[in-house]
Image (tube, rainbow over the protein chains, first blue to last red):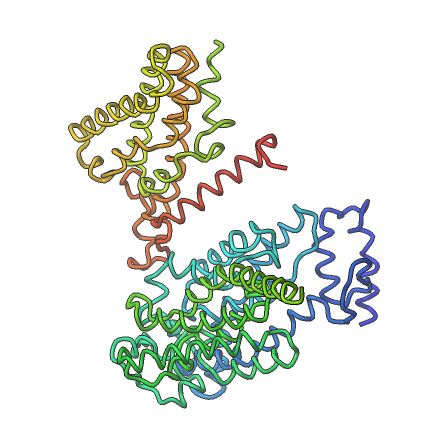
Amino acid sequence: MKGLRKLVDNVKPTFMEGGKLSFLASTFDAIETFLFVPNTTTKKGAHVRDCIDMKRTMFFVVLALIPAFLFGCYNTGSQVGLEGFTAFWYGLVRVLPMVAVSYIVGLGIEIIYAQIRKEEVAEGYFVTGFLIPMIMPVSTPLWMVALGVAFAVIFGKEVFGGTGMNVFNPALVARAFVFFAFTPQMSGEKVWFSDWKMMGAADATTGATALEQLATTGQMQWSVMDAFLGFIPGSFGETSTLCILLGGLLLLWTGIASWRTMLSVFAGGLAMGYLFQAVGLTEYPAYYHLLVGGFAFGAVFMATDPVTSAQTNTGKYIVGLMTGALAVLVRVVNPAYPEGMMLAILFMNALAPTVDYFVVEANINRRKNRIKSVK
Amino acid sequence: MSNWKNLTGPLSSNNPVIVQILGICSALAVTVKMEPALVMGLSVIVVTAFANLVMSLLRNGIPSRIRIIVQLVVIAALVILVDQFLKAFVYDVSKQLSVYVGLIITNCIIMGRVEAYALGNKPWDSFLDGVGNGLGYAAILLIVAFFRELFGSGTLFGYQVIPDSWYIANGGFYSNVGIMLFPPMALIIVGVIIWVHRSFNKDLQEK
């Protein structure tokens, strides 16, 4: 560790102002602060004294994603007929190229932007880059992933001003882009299963996801327990509600994600599910909605994104409830989209600032009225 | 030539679409393919040029209170002429363009140039200004249509450009980017053109 510190300190002058490679200052800074907690402190303005900076926060989110990721590896293998460690190994090998493409393309663009603008490389992509492979079907061609990542980083984030300024969740922008750009490769019966023939994987497995089965027949071929544990086809990291909840617990414990948003998304989805069940549009139990598809993943990791979600506490309840309700609404009512979580979250991202505005206005009015009543 | 700027100005530094942000709606609607975009561009060139010419000739005889209605009559007459011409000679494209030819009448560029330029300038200058603005509009339409048709359908002017063997269905790796066929993508492409254009024209950048 000391040797590494020494090495970093030795090469530092080359990248500082006046050094030979000073045009790479942002890149160097990104690597240095990634390796070591920076020794600088905020100088002005009010701030919370805490040793956790943005990079450490992002690291916790990635940590929270690990259970779902590991299970995704196993499930990818198990969906093509493998068992035990082979299944896990197969899935890991299958998904690593996608993770690599996501990080190389995304971080590449981020670093180029930071260099041009002479800013520090922002940390936001650390999580986004990990989320993107987890919400794609495992057999998505890599160049499509790369295109989606490029679109998300440039048009979902950088044009708004970079990390912290984005209106939409960048990972979902990537998925939405790939979904609408390459609809045949992103939906249907083949995409949920890996197409690599190795380690004895069964070839050309096909099958509808639980959501598609529920939408068309009103039943699914898996038990509720399978759906909860995640032994169903779907996007790479979204299937296991249990693992997602484990990650969610870590996020709640560290206080990174808001429990208000998370809880109200589940509540909204459940309420809407019961409503549809009551009026007879769906025959399966309402809680199925929370177990299948990307509902849990979206509720825990996407809707709680501190940048794009509502900022006020009341706003978080409203946005959360509407996200859950909208997701179920799209699933049940719109036959073209069996999954509605992505669209619901993106839509509520767009509305969140408006919700916040009205919450703040309502608070101002309430206090004005209080002054009046005292007078 | 002193009025040379009338013709070249609207092509870049005073482009009606990407600088004045006029005529966006039709830029989104007719740019799925190159052919309709080209025909639309030519139609708008003809209409702006002759609307400017006619209104400039009439400019001293019209009471300013009724000028808008006169402009509308002139523009509408020209649009109908263009529409009939297209129906007679390029019926297929006319069908693809459908209502958008008729809607040239509401194109802000035409009314804008007549109001802002033709009513106060000589006929020849106005004519050149009309041609210039039409060309500026057509140029943007063609750029947008180029990207949308190439990546959305793999063709240019209807000819297959991307080899058939590249497609997934034929054992390749490539797939058309379906989102290019949706109007929102046209808006994003126009945005990118504005972005690139402004980064080369520092004086257009807002502070």
